[in-house]
Image 1 (cartoon, rainbow, N blue to C red):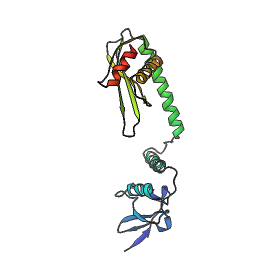
Image 2: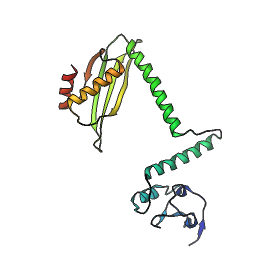
Image 3: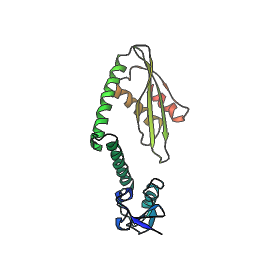
Image 4: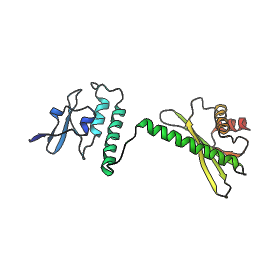
Length: 208
């Protein structure tokens, strides 16, 4: 079986391989785990990094604070290389800069929507839903429906956030009222449409 040493591939970027032992056998790249020394296939177009990622999560001898973060950093690195290939003048930004830009954009759009909701002559109808995901975390969503000054029907999700327990009708009513007060539209509500969950009966009674 012929083998040849290859250069710094994707598998090296997650600090999982020993480059001196990284070889290609039968056209398949091999990687040696630095934790348990197991030989794995991965790093090319056919195998990618799925096998390596799966092994990293179950190998007890690899000491990573956050395996998911390692793989995320790997993906970001490859995306940057791809963008640089498409546009040599591309200058990547840090995650902190991206977060700051998104936060600033959100604040700008929210202020614009608050002004629009404050100036419309009509009232606002709401729909709301709450559900629990497989991790037992609760989330609540509030959507505003209204007709703008040009007689266009619009629907905007004005809140989507984590809803900590207890998920009682009283607690949900407090959360909804908090949303409305934050948007300054608590006096402009025409209706609130909900599903048939029993907690919603208590919630609408409190909101009234």
